[in-house]
Amino acid sequence: MRKIVILTGAGISAESGLGTFRDDGGLWSQHRIEDVATPEGFARDPDLVHRFYSARRTQAAKAVPNAAHLALAELQRRWSGPVVIITQNVDALHEAAGAEGVLHMHGVLAGALCTACGHRWPAPAEMTPQTTCPACTAATARPDVVWFGEIPYHLEEILTHVQEADLFASIGTSGQVHPAAGLVQEAAAQGAQTVELNLEPSEISRAFDIRRLGPATELVPAWVA
Ligand code: BJW
Image 1: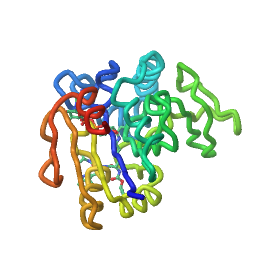
Image 2: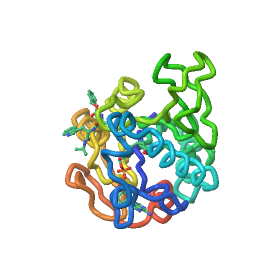
Image 3: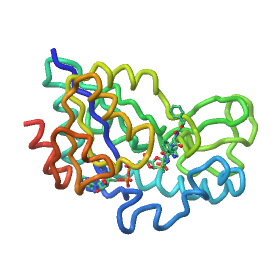
Image 4: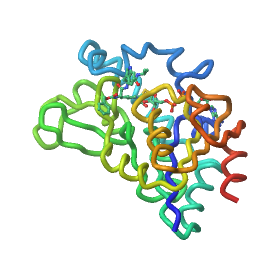
């Protein structure tokens, strides 16, 4: 009963119309990371950060899963052993494709988090600095996502899965952000076979046993077939 662990990044949702971060024209060419993806940026200008995430929340709500998301969900149903999907993505396209138990290590666009009391609730389509927490009523809501300098979610569970993996696959990620980028080494150190499926070579391509280049909607269905 071989265990498959899959790490996905923005590239898997690109063909659903959601922008990646570091490709030409990606989100980080239009917005400064320090302004919109750090706790310091949020403290300086919460209105700017809320507008950035509200726009992405609206866009993500309209997106539909593509052939790559659907193929991974199908693999989960078909494979005799466990298939664990770890995503860096904050969209819900794996779930919309029917995947189960997805571990969102960088949080979710659909979530709100109170910086005062830690309460979590479904984010309204448009969050603003005036959005109040339903539990403590303070106007201290932020998107429930993981910014630079913050600890990613589910790390312990993720590491356990990766260390138990017989096969580790990375799909549509540039391998520039840690600790996600280090998971392949963790898997390889425990003897897993490692596969990278990406549009172009990533920062960490050399760490993989097998590398395939191309769009996720072509590579992933072919890989799981
Ligand atoms: C296609 C395609 C198609 C296109 N088909 N493919 C040195 C060493 C280690 C760590 C650090 C370090 N220096 C600094 C750090 C820490 C820092 C970090 O990694 N910085 C780097 C920039 C160096 N990391 C952190 O701060 C993290 N926390 C942390 O380290 O805590 C400390 C700690 C951890 C563990 C234990 C103990 C302590 C937190 C990182 C949070 C990242 N947050 C963001 C924003 C989330 C919310 C939001 O969405 O706005 O996460 S940044 C952004 O990058 C987002 C993504 O999830 C993440 C990764 O991006 P991804 O998915 O790889 O996208 P791209 O655009 O980079 O790549 C897309 C790829 O797809 C490309 O390769 C394309 O070719 C490909 N592609 N179309 C297939 N159709």
